[in-house]
Each structure stands twice: as structure tokens, then as C-alpha cells.
Length: 116
Length: 116
Image (cartoon, rainbow over all chains, first blue to last red; front, side):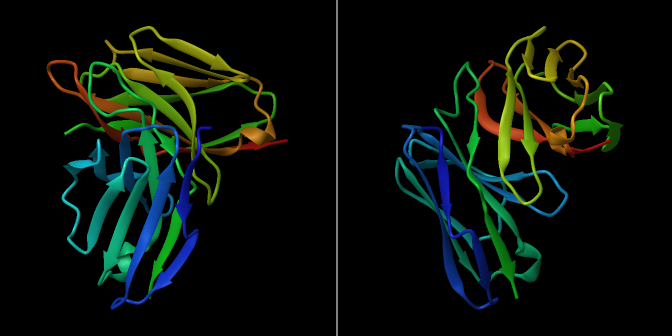
């Protein structure tokens, strides 16, 4: 089973709301990722978790707060977002991140976020 | 900073024709991925290329990697309408010791349209 699931599929939130995106995988992967993708642009890496620890933060504003409660679950907590944060948020997972080998990333279906 | 450039960015092809998408990158890496994305959907992994000279084929698509030239190609043979999508290459950054950290940098994407 090479499936990464994400909920919700769509989310509309106001600039003062707090919401969370959820990502889950049951492939035994120990690396999980958050990407942001604007329309007609490539995905941009936001965060990388390796063995439930944050290993890469690509200078993402603090209004985005990631959390990895266990090896199967990744959350992205959202607070006080701006309209320009509207995008498709993609979660991915891979067997590992680091090492002398490169591990294929499997992407979830994404959450389409609209900030009003 | 790693730069990944694809060309062309837009490709309109007739069914049955052949064409090649190019992916150039600016720093040493022997780890390159090709993904496909349909409109409004997530990324589907097509090819994983992990060494110089790697060549992989699946159906009408063939990908290759030349690490000396820092170039990967995605060749389309006898295009069909079902191949219409956006294609991304992505490069995995490795450090001087050859260690990967799962930090993918994507090209801009090539929007492929196949018409009768």
C-alpha cells in the first residue's frame, strides 16, 4: 500500500481562524514532508520530519506550525493566515531522508486551502 | 543555491509525434525524479534516476540522467491524449559526503498538451 492520505480535501478559513491539516501514512516510512504549491507553480518544500523530529524548516513563517505526533501522522497547524497563503498543501512521505541512498517520496492528494 | 530548469515550459504536441523535455540543474547530484501532475491532482511518481547513465522506460515515456552534463531528459514516443499533464523533474540535494536529506528542488514544470 503506497498511499498517503490527507484531510480535509478543501478548507476555507478566515484570517483569524485556527485550523489544522492532517496527513497519514501506514507504509512504515520514517520521513514526512509538507510542501506548498501555488497555481501553475512547482511544489515548494516547507518542512521535513525525520524519525518524528523536525530536520528541515525552509524559513516558513510561524503562522504555520508543523507537528509529528507519531511515525504515521503529520499535522500542519494554521493560525492567522494571509490570503497569499491560499494554495494546495501537499504531504509526502519516504522510507527515510538521509543517507547515501535517495528515497522516493510518495505524495498525498493535497488539501486545497483558501484564506478569505 | 540549486537551480533546476526545465524546457520547454509549454509543449503542444500532435498525437503520434515524438518529443523530449529537458531538465538542467546547477549543482552536482546523481538523484533525480520525474513526476506527473494532472490538473487539480497530486504528484504521481514516474521515474527515479539514481546514477549517471541511468535510463528507465515505462510505456511511451523514457527518462535518462547524465550527471556530468547535469541533464535529464524525458522522451515521449508516439504521444497520445492521455499523456496530457504537467511534468516536473526534481533534484535531490546531496552534501559533499554524498548524503541526501530528502530536500527536493523542483523544476518549473512542463505543461504538455497532446491534440489529435
